[in-house]
Length: 104
Image (cartoon, rainbow, N blue to C red; front, side, top):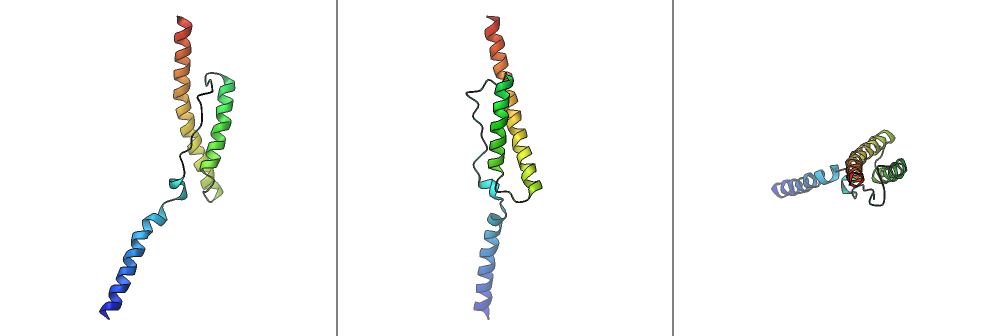
């Protein structure tokens, strides 16, 4: 009886060890969402429009594996919000650089 109990305890331990890995969402293993902006002037409406399209594609790609329409939509909105936040910082730097060059 003790050998049987030891085997069950061993199997249960392995199952519990694997549980945290199974609970990690697929998006945790996904490559980070990124958008190329080196070729864009984010200070212009045209540059921001191209950035918006790229951000939309990146968010859709990043969140594609999430099941459930509402969860996927929340993921996309979160990715776009983070990308827009980073783009705003780049845009501010580009505007400051243009202002500095114009003042010289």
